[in-house]
Length: 87
Image (cartoon, rainbow, N blue to C red; front, side):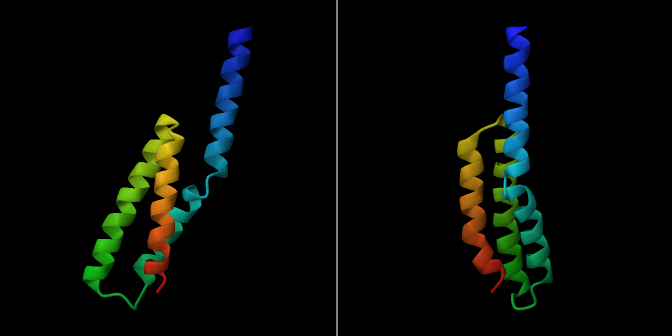
């Protein structure tokens, strides 16, 4: 019984973290913003998209492995890229 309670608590905590993570919504929004940006040339968009996809991969891996350090790193990447995407 004690193990079931601990497992349920850990499951709920990880689910709540995933739902509350801003990157879960902001990465797809950044991809759409980049695709619709008409002020960047194709080469700039390609470089930013590559960086954005790399950050998203770290983000997804962070969620999959419950690695808060990776999730934090991916959110820092996103915050660095967002101003470049929306210029």
